[in-house]
Amino acid sequence: MRTVLTGLTFGESVRWHRDRVWFCDWVEGEVVAATPDGQREVMARVDTMPFCIDWLPSGDLLATAGGQARLLRQRDGALETYADLSAITTKPWNEVAVHASGNAYANSINFDFPGGEYRPGLIALVRPDGTAVTVAEDIAFPNGMVITGSTLIVAESYAARLTAFTIDPDGGLSDRRVWADLGEGAAPDGIGLDPNGDVWVADVPNQSCTLVREGGEVLRRVETPLGCFSCAVGDATLYMVVADYSDPAKMFSSQTGLLLAEDIG
Image (cartoon, rainbow, N blue to C red):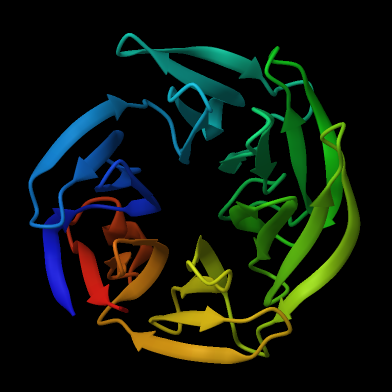
């Protein structure tokens, strides 16, 4: 395992895109792209958190503005409102995943975190015209999401599982099923697709990133020195953002975060 970057505050939403590893530093409000040798560039700034990223088929960056209940699109360097999600819920919006059709899926934990009374979360479909509609509910703290073909997979952090849906031709979600039961004590956060179609699962309290096959079989486990919040695979390398989570208050004021890389080729 090698360290690509140090001094992150709160890294999340790791993605591999155009030969660079991208991530969001929630506290600094930065979307960062880094080369495998650690050359970094701030690609966008988002002034609310949480925020996560993906790309439209056009190549435009899409970002959740979680605290503002909006989905943002970057064109000509500027972020503009792509969809207003407040009619669905004003509670924090988290991950976003874009389908090849141009439809985007954003999830919301649907309660104030931390400290608020728990409520099940949801997933919304955001069409290319910016209209949004709820397509899945009763999700136990929706977190990382990936799309593979016509399947959307979401991590349910409070249920220790990955849940899958079939993406219908009209963009709706159907055939809800447990893709992988991760077992008691698991706390899935960000997830990333492996080239073989398996899924890497970042787990903060268990300080690990685990490769899981559909059905729940564990194929590989990478131990991390700090809590692992998100992950992505690019160029036969697993990239992970980690941070010291032992004191949540200090997570927002100290720079313990790291971007790590592990050869999985």
